[in-house]
Length: 184
Image 1 (cartoon, rainbow, N blue to C red):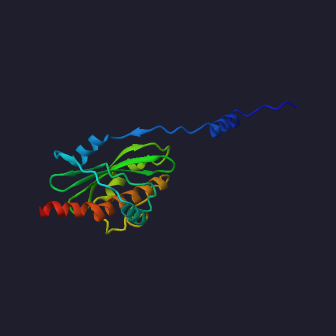
Image 2 (cartoon, one colour):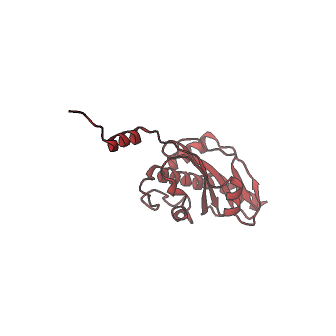
């Protein structure tokens, strides 16, 4: 009796042992995101120093562990804010931008870079639009006021936590800057 390998079995074995290759997808650049989120407005770079205390408060409110970089913040003449941040998806970093109005409410989100193999649906406008109008006083929690996407749970959770972190940054640091410049 001769053994004949099943070609479907061999294909199945090859498919399961083949590495999954994630390729970076750049959706928009920082400049393009600025034009999308603040059309016809000029933005002025407005970096801030992120103290350990501020970093701890943002981490506590949002669960995002990696440090926030204070050098990727811009401001509009009318008090709007454009903030670029990064969070881990499942394994790789997701770079995104959040636009806030002068009172700290989210007016839009753009995904800049997404490297993960799965979960790219977070870049779809329908999912991102859930954040519009949210402020630091809102829960901004996955499965509470932000819906999950099946197959993209970690990306959804971490982006949701990241947006919470940005709104808390506004409340703790940027709002005071806005009020100080109005007083002048």
